Length: 404
Image 1 (cartoon, helix red, strand yellow):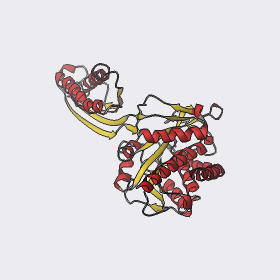
Image 2 (cartoon, rainbow, N blue to C red; image 1 turned 180 degrees about the horizontal axis):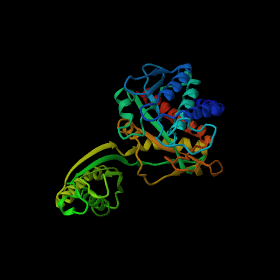
Image 3 (cartoon, one colour; image 1 turned 120 degrees about the vertical axis):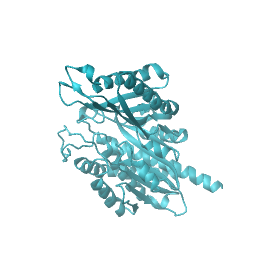
Image 4 (cartoon, one colour; image 1 turned 45 degrees about the horizontal axis):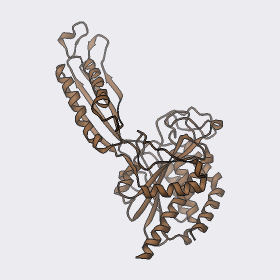
């Protein structure tokens, strides 16, 4: 039965390729920043309502939950896609180029949403044969530190969900390749803000002031020593300063500097130690120079930790779809963050990489770059792996329920 349904799903997915490409291009032409995903939400809603999905919308955000109910008493398997774009001016010259100045889908969330829509349509066609309900989570605001996953979790996205799957397009793998990772796949993603308060003076009389620029530069130097000298090198960690603002004129000693940055780790114990180390370093530097400081640390998304059994499922179905040689163990985690990690803290699931690199199409450019683009031949591959993985969970769960 499972193989029959899978065969039917794959046949439908192949027939949907052109439609899914049109959906992806529509979203790409109309990118929306985090928290502003209304066009994308209503596009998805319009398509899936016609397919018989029960849609849940929310007043406080643009996330969307689409349920295919087979049996009210049955649990769900979930598939998640993110929808938001980035504040980047697109430099591609394609017919589907962003029509919104300064905003583009430079991370592939347009493709993620289109893939999920295609998989949802395919599942609707085999609804009467499914042993379990299916839930599609279309998430807002993945690109911001607070992340939209928390909103959706609070609003019941994971209620009665037995497993969840997600993917991310990946320009470091060729189209037709799939990357998987057991255990920790991506880093935690925290942010911080530092303010240094000095004393203004004439630039010719620095001894009469407290130079906040000098103090802040010494702080930057000392913060970098935390990684190189206080953290076990076997536990990767990153402290990066992203902004520094201060000063009003070339001949005035600056009295206030603000710095912001990010911290990435793949070990929760290391993560919890770093804020104290940072404050010790900042405090010592500031006080030694006669300055004052403030330090605010915001814990963002945790490490993304895949469930081993769910990764086994991804590997199994990926080998069926693209062949064993194209299913690649990524082995090492990356320091990028992803709020899919919050779903995985609650239910078992797996996140995998969908290769999109095709040099002839110019789709090997890294994410968050103004020339980023997606090889659309990868879209059916993503749909097949997500739907086949969900199907595996359904039949495993059905066996468990029957045995009870």
